[in-house]
Amino acid sequence: MAKKFQNFINGKWVDTKSGRTFANRNPANWDDIIGIFPKSGKEDVDEAVRSARAAFEKWRLVPAPKRGDILRRVGDIMVARKEELARQMTQEMGKVLAETQGDVQEGIDTAYYAASEGRRLFGHTVPSELPNKFNMAIRVPIGVAGIVTPWNFPMAIPTWKIFPALLSGNTIVFKPASDTPATATSLVEVLLEAGVPEGVVNIVHGGGGDVGMNIVRHPDIDLISFTGSTSVGRQISETAGGMLKRVSLELGGKNAQLVMDDADLGLALDGVLWGAFGTTGQRCTATSRLILHEKIHDVFLEMLIKRAVALKLGDGLKAGVEVGPCINENQRKTVQSYVDVGLKQGAQLVAGGEIPTESGLEKGWFYKPTIFTDVKANHRIAKEEIFGPVLSVIRIKSLDEGVKILNDTIYGLSSSIYTADVNTAFRAIRDINTGITYINAPTIGAEAHMPFGGVKQTGNGHREGGWTVFEFFSEWKTVYIDYSGGLQRAQIDNYEN
Image 1: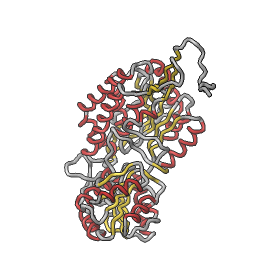
Image 2: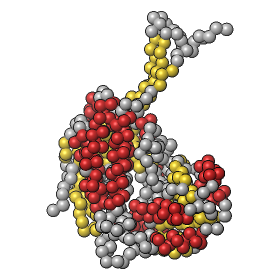
Image 3: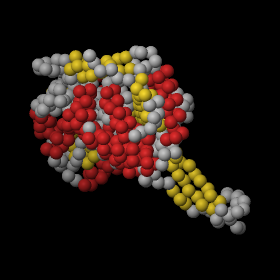
C-alpha cells in the first residue's frame, strides 16, 4: 500500500476539499509508487492563503536574527538527514545519488547563508539636506509569498526561495512540482521541526492550472517567485503583472560551452560531459550547445564521443550509474521529437539518439546521451530548450564568431569558455550576453552565496541566491526623523541665492 500524503495548511496536515489524489512514481521504475498526493484546487489555495495572511501579522514582528536562528536549525536538521533526503530525491526524480546529495547540500548552504543574513539586512543612513534631521532607509517584509518550483532541483530551488522569504519576514504558500511532491513535503517537515510557527509555511500539492495559477491570481498573494518554462512564466507575468504583484521569474536556457584552440582539452571534456549529461541534461543551466574552434574540433569530438557512449545509465541509487532517466514519459517524448527534428534539418547524429534496450532499463524513462555534429546556428536544436541529454556541436573559426553564435538565442542564463589566454577570457566576460559566465568550468555549478539568474527570455531581471534575493523578498521603507522642533520644508527653496 502506497503512503498517503497531505497538504499542510494552518498548522495541520489535511486532505483536499475535493478528496482527489494523484500517484507519484519513480521515473527509473514506473511500477514503484512513492506515494499518493492531494490533487488540490482553488478552495485549498484559498485556505492556505488565509492561513499565511493571518500568520504574517505575528511573523513580521519576529526579529530577523530570531528568524535566522530558526533557519540555522533547519540547516542543522538537513545535515543530520542529508543521506535520507538525497535517497528520497533520487527515487522521486531520478538523478544519481551524488547529485541529489549535492542538491541537499545546496539547501544546507542556503539555510546557513540565510541565517547569517538575519543580522545583515542592511539599510542605509544618509545625510539630510536640513539641520537637525536624520534620514534612513530600512528593509521591511512584504506579505504572503507564492512559491512555485520545478522538479529538477526539488530541494535546492525551493530553499533558494523559501529561506530568504522567511528570513525577510514573509509567510509562504508553496506549490511544488507534481513530479517531486515527496521531497517538498520533507522540506516542510524540516521547517516545522526547526520551529517555524503555525501558518507561516503552507504547502498545497497539485497541478499548475488548479493550484499554481490560483496562487498567482489570488488577491492576497503579494509576490510570486516562479522557476519553470518560459511559456508558463509569460502567462504568470501577464496575470500577476495585471494585478501589480511583485514577480520573480527564473525561466529557460540554451547554454553553450565555447572551447578555444588553446584550451586544456581534457578539462574541457570533463566540463561538457558534466554540463550536458549531468541530471540527464535536465537543468536550466545544462550545456545544450558545444561551440568548438575548428583547430581542435575533430580531435575533441572524437574524445567526446568515446566518453559519452561509455556513460552508464540506470537507477541513480545503484553504484556506478552516471546518468538517470528523464523525469517522465512526456519529457522523453519531447527529447525524441527534438532528435527527429535535428535529423530532418540535416544535423549528423554521432552518438545516442535512441531509447536504450538494456535489461533493467525497460521500466524507466531512460534516453541515451545524444550528440549531433554539423549543427548550424539556425537549427532548432541549436535554438530551442530541449531539457534532455542532447548536445549540439557547432564549429567556429574565431572567438568573435563563437561569441556571436553563443549569443544568438532568446535565452541568456549560463555560458562557459575554455581558454588559456587571459585576454580571451576577459573579452568573453565582456561580450557574452548571459547572467552567468564560467571560465574554464562547465555551465553548471552555481554557489548559494552568489546571484543566480539570466537575461533576455531567461527571466525578468531578478536574481536568486546571494545577497540579491533579499532585495526581492523585502521592501524599502524610507524614514525621516526631524528633531528640529520646527517646520522644515525640504525641496522648498532651502538654498540661499
